[in-house]
Amino acid sequence: MAGNLAPPAWRKSSRSANNAHCVEVALTGEAVGVRDTKDRQGGTLTVTPAAWAGFVHRLKHGHYDQG
Figure (cartoon, rainbow, N blue to C red):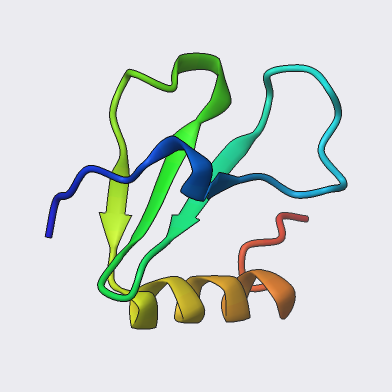
């Protein structure tokens, strides 16, 4: 599933600060790429759109909240 995701496809949250403590996401029809803004050349986590949607759903519903 690894692929070369073009730089214009990458985006980060509009709520992100202007420091380098963010992740960027690139959506394609076949995959979702996730990378660290501190090291954009350091590698990309690539998952299926279904896996990404499940992860985002769990985030929004507090499944990863601590405390």
